[in-house]
Every structure is written in structure tokens, then in C-alpha cells.
Length: 95
Figure 1 (cartoon, rainbow, N blue to C red):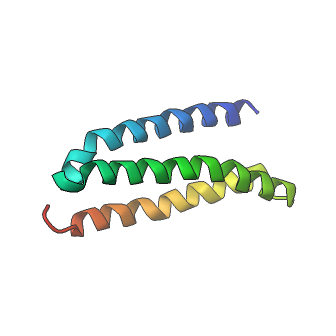
Figure 2: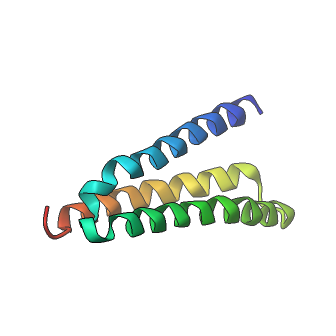
Figure 3: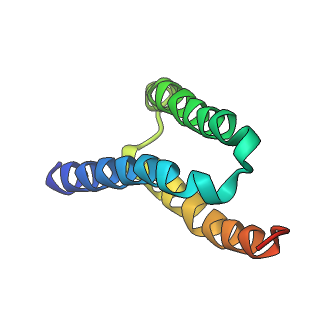
């Protein structure tokens, strides 16, 4: 439980930092005419995930999934998707 608590705090801090990062990076990522819509959509998707994630995790735990399995699955997804995001960023036009 102690490790889970520390991991939860770290994830929470990093997620809040990511949200703050959206406000910082938005001027560079969106053209001026769609900037507010782009940031709004990005934040909306994040909020949708924040609503959906506890529902899905609760359902998975009720179905018998072990908490450790869920943590490892998310860690694996992040390890796989992080390089993909970096590759997409490098391939983006206008950089």
C-alpha cells in the first residue's frame, strides 16, 4: 500500500504538470485561429479520460483484475506509446 500511495501521488503530480504543459505548448502547437478550440478539445479529452478511467478500473477490479496487473498494463502502454509520440512529433509538418 505504501508503494501504491507514493506511485499515486507521483502520477497525480505528473498529470497536473501535463495539464499545465498544455497551456504552455498550445501557442506552438496550434495556429492562432484555432488555438482556443485546440486547447479546449485537448483539455476536454483529458477530462473525459479522468471521468472514464475510474469507471473502467473499477469494472476491471470487480472482474478480478489484480491492481498490480493494471499498473503494469498502464506502464507498458506508456513505454510503447512514448516513442510513438516522439516519432510523430518529429514527423509533424512545419517544425
